[in-house]
Length: 92
Image (tube, rainbow, N blue to C red; front, side):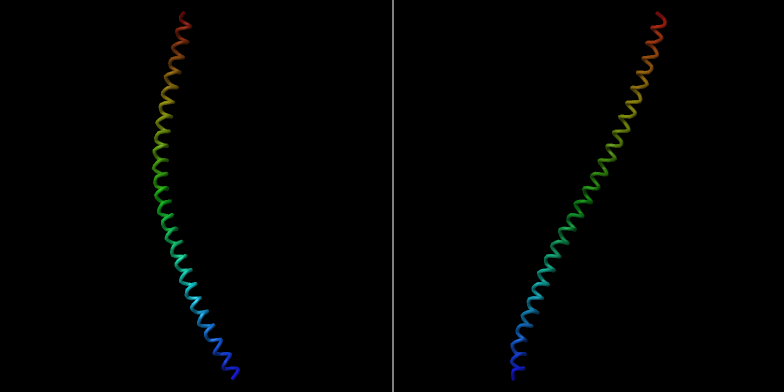
């Protein structure tokens, strides 16, 4: 009979463990689902940021190219003025 009593007392403990495991698993799954949702939202935000940064990069590259062109035109004009000034110096 002692063996029967042992099993009787052990069975409820096992049932409690199974209930705790399923509650723990459900809680773990809920936490995991929440983390996945946050990760998905973060990925979406990062993709949007990446798109904006690429667009800004293209805009800045175009602006840089335009400024380089202006710089080159200014340099050419200054070089032409220097040549004319030297010509005027030599003529005087």
